[in-house]
Length: 232
Image (cartoon, rainbow, N blue to C red; front, side, top):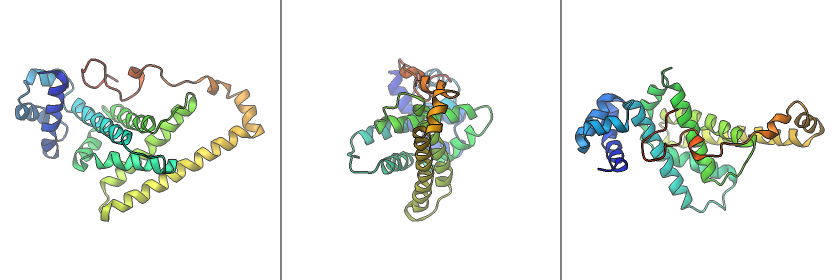
């Protein structure tokens, strides 16, 4: 059995167990038994057990979101609405109980860095799917802002019982408005004399910042060769 096929089978088989056992070693063992994947292969694909399983499931959702967005015509939408569409789509692709269990897991100090990188990976996947071409410090600030928006929206969504989850949509709109105000302020600063003086003097180093050049350097990406989540 190919590693990619085994990984997909394990992820599909794991989800029904997550609600009861969380993203744990118990869930991984149950998924291996249900899917027919050899326990040794399951352990090799997910060496940290439930943590790697949760990260792989999260990244699977990012890829599916990117695939769907690539098939949609978003040109008639305002850019802020494109971002909202991407975030809401990502939530629609997720299982709420699995996300709740994942949030609990990644709140632990031992795994908090993994959770942060997973959220960054989602923000990066959204910006990439929307055609972001920034090649300077803006590459980082865009992803930092969207990571904060996405993380806050997920937490709100987990407790949202409104009809059609309209409250989550409204919450997301407010968070995006906050980011738009920040971007306008940043643009205004860059265009005024004081901003230009700062960028030419004390903050000139910002002009030399560039995004990672190799795909493997991007937080949240998988390792090459189909070996599961890259080590962080």
